[in-house]
Each structure stands twice: as C-alpha cells, then as structure tokens.
Image (cartoon, rainbow over all chains, first blue to last red):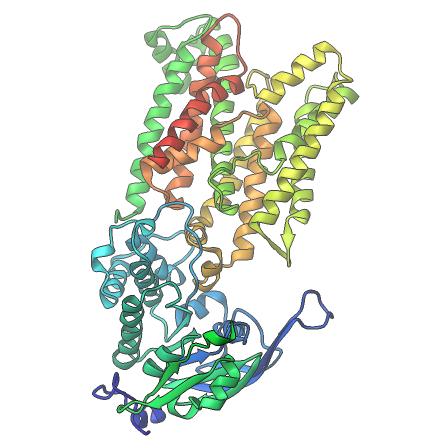
Length: 289
Length: 339
C-alpha cells in the first residue's frame, strides 16, 4: 500500500518526493465554534484538527453532511479566526493576512452564487486578476495573457466569449476553476466542486486538479462527501465526523470498513484495488425501508 | 470579450457628452420665447468670450436666469439619480432597485411637508428639511438593515421597503391636513419637478456633492464588478466587502437625497438609465458609472424640455413626463430580456 495509485503512478510527484516537499498549509490544533449570539452555547463545534498539506499534494476533507468540512475549509481560507490553535500558510496565519494578500495566495472555489447581470466567461476569469490590481484599474496585457492561460489550463479556451448563464454546469465549473487559477495562488481550495456534475464532468475536473497539483506545484484541498472519488484522486484524507477529526492519512490508511461505516452510517464494503487505492462498495439496504 | 481600457471609457463619455450638448442647445432654444440657433450661438459666444455687455436683455433674462439654471439643475439631478440607481442595483444585487427603493425619497418628502406646514414662508426651508428627512431615513435604514455588523442585501431591501411604506403612510396622513393650495405644491413635489427657482449657491452645493459622492462610487467600480458576480466570492478575491458596501450605500443615498431635495421624486430615471447604458456599453461598472451619469443628464434634460413645451403654456412636472415615457421603456427592456 505504498504507491500513490493509478492516477499518479507515472507522474513526478511520488509519495517520497511529496514528503520531502515544502509544507504549505499547516493546520495545528485548530478549532472553531458557531453560536447564534455571543456568549450563547455553541450550535456547532469543530474540535482541534491537525494536518499538513504540502506542495503538489491533493488533500480531500471527507465527511458526511454537518461534519465540519466547510468550517475547516473556511478556517484554511482565513475567512474565520480559529477559536484555538493556528492555520498557517508558509508560516503566516491565514486569518491575519489582509484580504488582497490572501487572495493572491489562496483561491477558493465555492458553490457559485447566482449571477444577476450577464457576464462573459472570459470577463469572469479576468476577475481573478482583481487581487493583483488597484481599485480604479484597467487590466494590462499581462492580465489578459494570464486569464487566457488559465482558460487553456482547464481546457475552456472555446468558452471565452460565451455567456456564463448559457454554458453547462461542467463547463461553468471549469470556468470558475480558471478564475481561481488566474489569481495565481499557491493553494487551491474547493468546496464540493463536483456536487452538481455528472460522472464524466466529475472525473474530468478531478483529473485536472490532480494534474495541476502534479505539474504546477499547487496544493489542492477539496471538501467532498464522495468516498469513491476521494480515494481515487487524493494523496491525503482528512476524515471528519460531527465536528471531530477522526483520522488523517493516505486513503489506504483511512479507509477502514468499521471506521467509515461508523462515520457515514451505512453498510460499506472496501476492497483494495491493484493500484493500492481502496475501492468503496455501496450496499443498498432496501429491506429496512 | 471586449477589452475595457481608459480610452474606451473616455470615447464613450465623449459620445454621450456630445449628445448631451446637442440636447442642451435644443432645450435652450425651445420655449415660450423661441430663439434661433444663430441668436443662440452669437449670444453664447458673447458670454463665453467676455463681451457680456453685448448680450441682449431678453437673452440675459430668459437664458441666463431661467433656462440655463434649470438645465444645469436637470443635468445634476439626472446624473445623481442614475449613478445612485446603478449603485443601489449593485449594492442590493437587484436589477429592479432604484434610488427610491430604500425610502430616501419618502423621508425627503416627509421633511418637505413638515417644513411647508411649519414655516411656509421661508424659501430654503423646504429643500433643507427635505435633505434632513433623507439623511434621517438613510441612518434609520442603515441601522435596520445590518446583520452581523454588515449591510446585508436582503435585510437592507426589506428594511428600506418597510421604512418607505411607513413614511408614505405618514405623508398620506399629513396631506389630509393640508389646504388645497399647499396640496398642489406638494403633489408637484411628489411627482418631481424642476421648475423651482433655486439660488445659485445651492446649485454649486449640488454639483460639489455630486462629484464627491459619484467619485466615491467610481473608486469602488471594479470591486462592484466582482461583488455582482458573487458576494461570498468577492471576499476571497480581495474585496473589502464591508467597506465597499458602506461607501456605496452612503454615496448613493446622499446622491438621491441631494436630487430629491431640490426636484422631488422624479421617477424611472434612476431605474432605467443604468439598464439602457448596460444595453449599449455592457455591465462593467467602470464604464457604467460615468455613462449612467451622462445618460441620466440626457434623459432629464430631454424630458424636462418636453414637459415645458409639449402642451405650452401649461408646464407638466418633469416626473410625469419621465413616468409616461419610462413605463413603456421598462416594458420594452423586460420583454427584450425574456425574448
């Protein structure tokens, strides 16, 4: 179980190389609590979580709904301040970076907000240059070149002059990813990027993310509840359950049947694939309904 | 993808400025006492070149004292309303937002009516009281529309609409106590009218206020572009969302308050002009704000000229004119969007 799996086997970023690579994101005993009002009892708590994400590494934060995945992602993005512990990017606490600097280093792909006025995909990607400009500023040739390159990196050059509201969900997600790349960040954070995509678009997107980590040195951290995809594409799994971090490690180390059955509350089968990545088998239990 | 450059912004503005100039000349010419373009040109030249002693008395009284100030007022009011409308549409993330949606105009109207009731004889009392009413409304809606220390689009919209309807109820109540002569003055004011003669100093205050507030909105233009594509995303693209919203809220409200205090609630301009400009120039706020300002000026000067001359010698309030023309334009834009 030492290989990194079928997807990355022939790629430069082997496990050994990754472990020697630079630690980019350091989450150290970070916790958080939501409450309705100040001093009220917390409605939800994320307990102390620790893990590290390196250059070229693909991390999946995995867990069922309401397990604290998005909270952890927001902590990494620096959108919220940890109650205790630290979240660092190259040694700086992310929540204390100013908004522009943060946006130059961390790109966050979220569930998209509805667009009110029509916008071309190319202009949308160009917005990724916003943290690099000043307030009353017109994009330079360089910004256009970077936006073009970002579109090319996700295979969406042909969408440049299309309206965002007219393209398919999979295409849209690629354009959103291109905008994140146009920020030229060190870390790509993604909140359930495959949620509304069909299986082909899901695999296409995850392959691209895998490629970006391997070839372009990005640190990719995604939130997902898709057990199968996480096992297939991630180097490291951070398993969350009801606000607790239960396990951090390679898919093979984390995918223990009892553990996952306890977390996801369904009967599962797990088998090792020839490439060393675990496979999850879903078992229906119609008889109980 | 059409690239936006400073040059494109300047050319678009130059084009609109030329249209505005044409309409201003037309507006100067038309009226109860017509002037030929030759007379107009000659006298204007005398004025500009410093030979003001050669200007005829007729021209001086009708043009310099009556028509020109009214046109200038129309330009400032139109520009202020349109920039405010574009600002509110971005702030509230709602294409139906207009400068009056948050109740600023109702607050101003209430202030004006109270001034008319309390001290009908003082000339500058009404605009001053109207502006105070607008400021009080802006402050009230701000505190009602916050959520977790930040202006929240939907909370702000609801707070504004409720405040507006409460103020309107107060106005209705007060109007029942007015005599018919005052009532007529007020109804002109509620519809929006540019015929009030204002001291020159007030016009300068308007112009200064307009440039300060519109300039403040313009500095947030590229932030607004990002904000419109998604509020949660904007924060992670380096936009200081709290600050941008506060700047736009205050500036757009002040622009509305300035316009309403001198001309009443002229409808539709602030809603429609930004949409028409989006149709021609696209929805990039760096271009939309200056073009809306010029477009709004064109719309009001045109509407006021028609209001003055259409059924002369009777003068319509300009608000009646913009509403009559605005509703069909709005329906056209709506159907076009659905088509």
